[in-house]
Length: 462
Picture (cartoon, rainbow, N blue to C red):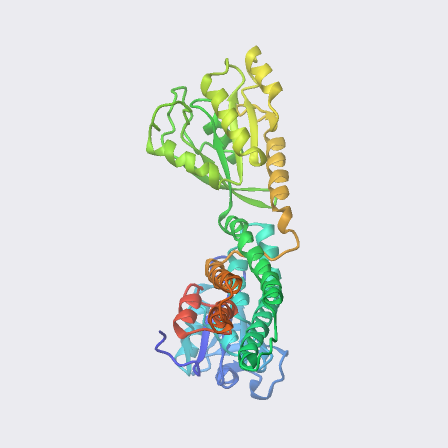
């Protein structure tokens, strides 16, 4: 819990001071214009209109110049925070930025806490919690898909959808309670069939958001692309070819890569988490190492699986087992990669590769032949996997996801109770619970603890 008052005038840099030529410092609060006017020359800002720019200099109490700056004035409520705001553009020297901060902090301002500008925007009704979290996601987004999803949320589309869901639930709750009031007179306001139909509509909307979370989580951390195959088929070489450098030791000794290794890589506009698994031996024996067991777990979690075959050698029983197992279970997300085309191709491997039905491609990790084509194939497959949610909101935030799951569980209890013919009085309790969970997502229903947890994850200046 913050020890500071939300009535304080706060200040913080809102841009990085590491590189660049210009930094920005934001002052927000009732005294913003008054404090800024004391140290900005030559203009008195106290009577300035919102949206005005001023060029001048910041000076200390002894009239010593600190820097030449440009000031932008915002008048409440027409600012990001909903308060009076002054934004100072100065030269991006950390010494200059610190001198400006120290000057104002000793004269009526305090340094903003992490996320405090966004928190004030929420408290003043400028944004809701989904939009606040979208700001944090937008700043940390690592791909074009993630950026566009965050921008859509920031525009308020999720807020509007949740508002409609909550309104529908409140209307249903009202009908349930109205039915209770008239039940003594033998009047039925809403039949069970009608109730279930209305609940199903809302239930499906919530379920759709929940379904999107797996993709949303991957967008946030990077889409997992698993490189797998039996030992010594070139998995480490493929990772190195993707990265353009030697990240993984390449050896002729089978099983050299003992652990699961991963690297972040950008393929055009898609951020991926490239995972080089330990060599998997598909035998009847117990899994041979912790690394192999971990690699097996990655099969289920991976967005794309790259199964490597060594085309220069006769295929082994392990190759056949891997192809059979992965092709049947993970057909939609597997690409068979025939490696070592720079060497003489084994006839049996060539025949096996020709019979393979999933997506496939021949490459040489050594010469990088067709590596760019493989990247394009991966990108196309990822875009195909995201197609079901194209033009839809994708949930990326764990807090939002958990509340949606709880809201869905509450509605499920309502559906089951209604089908059993239970009194609407009991249904109304779970209905209200579902309404509260939806309200917590956008911040209609919230507590100080929830707010402090959310905004403490922001960096200073946001």
